[in-house]
Structures are given as structure tokens and as C-alpha cells.
Length: 570
Image (cartoon, rainbow, N blue to C red):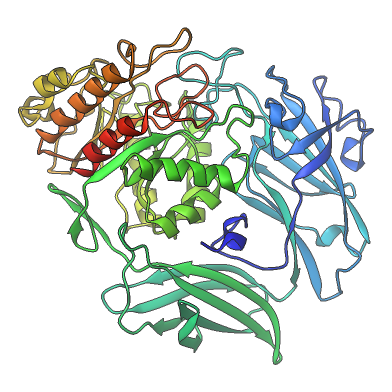
């Protein structure tokens, strides 16, 4: 692992010269919504500070106030005195929930809506000032129309919904760049031929682009242009996640003005009734559900090391993939999965109401996310919807069915190489994979429901889960897609507070008996081509993790080994 890249917020387009703006910022609540009228965008009197990128609701922010404040402000001064006339400064936000307005020396650089995608602004309107005052106004709400995932939409947490996240919650950073620069680099590798296409954009069309590909630091191919061939390409797979490094250089009038680094992997994903194939080889999916919450920092990883700790646990328990649930994780996480060969189902954060406004915003924000992350080889499926959240009438409402199908179709148009799950868990419409959630407590109960090949379930003759939903929405039926048990388990150890699915296990022996019994039942269900166990860690009141919220194993090493061996046997 290249730790320098692992700590970089945008690993698919890496530049060496960048500045991390995380740390202390001035901060203010604006509960009366007076900031704009009083001119806070040009600077405000700091009453308190906050530690970015942690939201004010978290202890890590230095504030730890979990109550709802719909408008908050941030400000910080940065020096730009070393910026040359041929350069500018790009300001990047990895995530700000939910609506951000960004000002530099009182000038509005732009706005962005949506909590889960990166956005950037050029500081050029505020230059050539030698110092820039950055001011950010962030607005959030408990609206069920905005994609919010597991962030609660009531004042208190309940069930499996947790404290909301308001404002900046991912890294803020800037980079000094040439005005003649690469603005995007999209890499399309073809494993069959070794051909690699580079879809690039740049600020100056007259500049010349040179691209080089490296294998283990040795240059193996280069071109002036946008296409080259890698001889005898090595494939990326979970067992051998081989990545090629890319170096792109831009020259204007013979002078190099920009250098960016990226990477890619040669691999294919195909699917049929027997399951998913990576590079033509059937891959049984042994996934664990991962929500990415931390006790003191909420949705924000404390640091890169915290992401590594979680992925170490994924591998320690014998899983080969994660279903990143209701969250678009920090892109550093995807880089770590790329280099480790850990497979990822990428799932959108749900809204919980449907109308034209919710429809429009969901589509726009999901498009941003797919375009941002589609070149990570670790991602093997897109999951825009889960358990009919945000489309509660999908069973029979044709408008909501059409909405889900449109999102799936748009996703396929942006990325035809990966399968799309239309509505994970039940009430599927048009879907490349058919996924089932079932939290029946014992292996015997699971086998009684699914051991007959799920013929009655697939035909829609009865409900399949203890929730009572059918597998397909009205008007849709099974079309020989792969079947996955994409949520099961959720076993909680005995605890005085919190919950899990079914009865709590009294001790480790009871936990293992139930866990291993469920896995044995799944082993007798050959119709399934993979599973996802709920879940990796505890989250707030939900106590059904293999690890507690502080990432401590609940089981002994012998217990972990028995789970690892059971998972590895599939």
C-alpha cells in the first residue's frame, strides 16, 4: 500500500501538491437564519470552533451537540501568496450534508446540494489576493425527501436510524494547480485485448497529453494521445488484486504544466443464473454488511487507520466483500479495497418519501456518485434502493416502479459493466440480481423457507420473509437472475441495552451455535450464489455486530476461527 495515496482524498486523480484543511475552523449556529442578512458570508465573529471534518453532532468535532440545527457556518483563512499568475487554487469538499454555499472573500463561488458526493470550486474569483477567507454556509433538515441513509429524520434515534450528520463530514482540501491542467481522467481497460482508453478533459485544448502505464514502477507502455496497449495484461481479482499505475502529463508549448497519477485494474464482471463471474470465474460472495459509523465521529472515519482496521476485520472473519450499507464511504476506503481485493456492493443513501422533488434530487445525486466512483475495480454492483425505502408504494404503484427502473437504466448507461440491484431485499422490478433479506432466527427456519429452491417465492405464490413482502413488485417476475441472501443473521450478544434480530445470544457458545447453524442452512441452498451477514460492527443502539462499536471482537480467537472457517468453506 502506498500510504501517501491512501491518505489522499481523491486517489483516482492524485497530485503531490495538496493541502489538507481539516482541523480547527471557526463555527457558528444560525438557528434564527440571520447570517446572510447580516453579511456572515464576508466573515463572522467566531463564537466557537469546530474540528473539521467531524460534524457538530459528534464528540470528535469538539462540540457534541446532537440536537437539530438547520443552518451552520464555517470559516477559515488560507494563504495564497505563493500562487503564480499561471496558477489557480482548487478547493475540494469530499462531503457536506446537505446544501453548501461556499464563499471566498465574500464572493459566492457556488453551491452544492447532496451530502455524499465530492464537489469543487475554483478560487480564481478571489485571487490574486494573498489571503483568502473561506466561509461555508451549510443547510440541513430532517426532510424525508432528501437522500439521508441511516440518518434519523426524527429528533431522537430509534430502530436502526441514528444521529443525523449536518455540514462538513468529509475532508476539505485544496491544491495549487496550473491554469492549463487535466480536469478529469477516465480509464477504460479491456482485458481481452490489453487496450486501454483514456477519456480525458483539460482546461486548454491546445495542450498535449502524454500517458504512461507502469507495472511495479516499471514503465511498460506510453503514448501521446488517449489509447495504448498493455502487453500480456495481468488481471485484477480478489485473490490477486493487481493494479497498474498511470501517469498523465500535460504540456503546453513544450513546458509541462500538470502531472496526475491514477491506477486501474483489468477485470470483467459477468452474471447469469449460476452467479457472478469475475474474469469468467464464478465467485461466491461472502459479504458482511458495513455501515461505517464510529462512536465519537459518527459517519466520518477517525482517520485512514480506522478504515484499515475495519477491512482487517472483514478479512479476519473470512469475508471477501462488504455491502457498504446506506452510505457512500470515503473514497480512501475504495482505494484500500482496490489494493486488497475486497469486493464492494455500493449502495445509495435512501430518502424516505417520494414525489417529483425527491425523484429529481435522487437521480442527480446518484449520477454524481456513480461517475465519481465507477472506476474502482473493487465495486462489483450498484444498489440504488434498499427495502423499498423512499418508494413505499412500489409493490403496485407504477409511477414508483418506473422511477426505480429509470434509475437502474441510468446507472447502466453510466456503467454497463456492473450489475444493478433495483431494490435490495424484496419487491424487485427490473434487476440484474435478485436479493433477499431474511432474519429468521435459526438455520432450521431458514432451510424450511428457502430449502426448496425458493420456487414458491420466485413464482410469487407467498411472502418469503418475516417482514411479509413478496420478492417481486406487481407485474414483475423472475428472469433467471442470480439469487443472493443479501441480509441475514443480525445476532446480538446478551446486552442490557440495544437490540439485534431475534433473541439475544446468552454467551459465545449460543452465538456460534446460531451463526454456524444459519451458515450450514445456506450451504444447503445451492440456488444462492452469495450472502451478506448483518453486520460488521455495532452501531449506536443496534448491537448485532461481530465487533462492538469500538472495534473490539466480541468472540474469542477460537470463535473467530470457527466463523472464518465456516465462511471460507463456501
